[in-house]
Image (cartoon, rainbow, N blue to C red; front, top):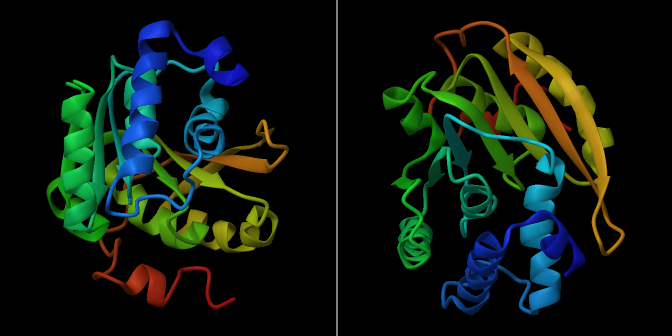
Length: 225
């Protein structure tokens, strides 16, 4: 994989390769992508390509981490930062913990919780939040924003459907005190188009957010489709 060879140092390359082996061989069906080359594109390249020129230091949260993507990939690529990976499904977080232990990732903390629950103990404690393939943008923003410090960043990974989602984003930005910083379009090795949507948190999140568990999805801030 050209991307991996060009962008990643050899020790990290070894860990990323092993991570893909762990994910694709897991008995818990963490991914539908089984062949190595496709997994490298879908899981590693997509996670890292928006941040080729970035440096992360601080404390970051990956919400709805699933099989550990993008959180474990980012933790390998940016070892000087602390990465908290959160998912509500215990069998997934148990697998993430196993992967992190085998890869000796000392900068990874794994939590089994919903984002709404995490906000009760970790409100405005993170420098940035990341969400990938979790929910529509307004739902994702309601879950992520309360966890981020004022002045921090929310990163959303989006596919081609972002253009249709943009209208829902605007409503959430206003209600949650966010500003849209960047819509970065990038192309993966297989030709697929992706977007990295970057928001700055301009003020403290209003006390009513996030709403009780499930409401961000059932009644999204941007309204129905």
